[in-house]
Image 1: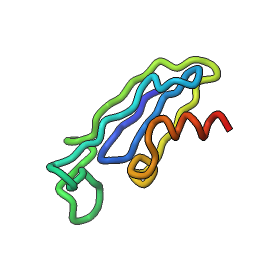
Image 2 (image 1 turned 45 degrees about the horizontal axis):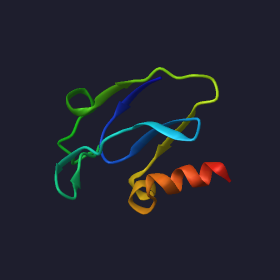
Image 3 (image 1 turned 30 degrees about the vertical axis):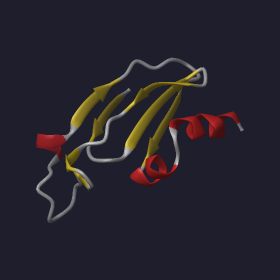
Length: 83
């Protein structure tokens, strides 16, 4: 799996109900995440983090906005998958 990651969104790789990988939030400073937009100084070419992850059959990949990571603990994410 190859992903270009920018900002405070989140990538989870879950295997056998365990979080194998969770992306880190990217911020200029506290409460000022890297974001893309017409007035933003952030560019994918300069700021995107390249993530390469080996994945296996039955792995679960979750790509979410910061709204999910702001409101759910990692344990809550695992609990939701178990439902």
